Image 1 (cartoon, one colour):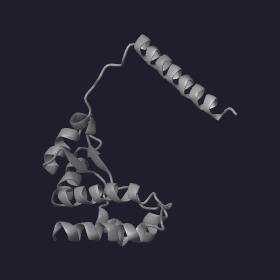
Image 2 (cartoon, rainbow, N blue to C red):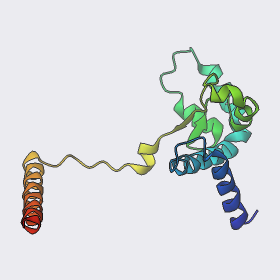
Image 3 (tube, rainbow, N blue to C red):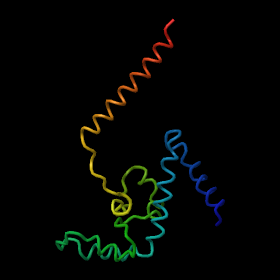
Image 4 (cartoon, rainbow, N blue to C red):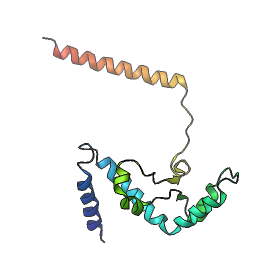
Amino acid sequence: MNHGEIVSFIWGVADLIRDTFKRGKYQDVILPLTVLRRLDCVLAPMKEKVLTTLAKYKGKGLENPDPLLRKSSGFAFYNTSRYDFAKLLADAPNVADGQVGRVGYEINFNRYFYKYQPPRPLPEIEADIKALEKEILEMLGKITKETKP
């Protein structure tokens, strides 16, 4: 499949779900579902191993099974749900009714994407707010002067 075919396929799916969601909101769904589907495909070969590892250590007092599950999946993330997209698709009516559990991925996004920045000092924040208030008042003053007869 080339890039154009993939794009056409994704937007074809978007056309299918367009009336399911509020107009203009389906684009908020298509990208996350595309990412989740990709994760589903990547994790599929190791899914049973992850579930077996989870079952093996469940109830044994292990505080943090995350390192073991990451090792089982071979990635920094894993799927602990018994569902994947194929199983969800096979049971689509129950998925729509909310009777089927969620597909769950454990990804430590903070580790990869978040860089801590300490909060700014309160006087600095207050000064910024006061500057914005002044700017807004000046803009409103210009508007009201322009609209007077």
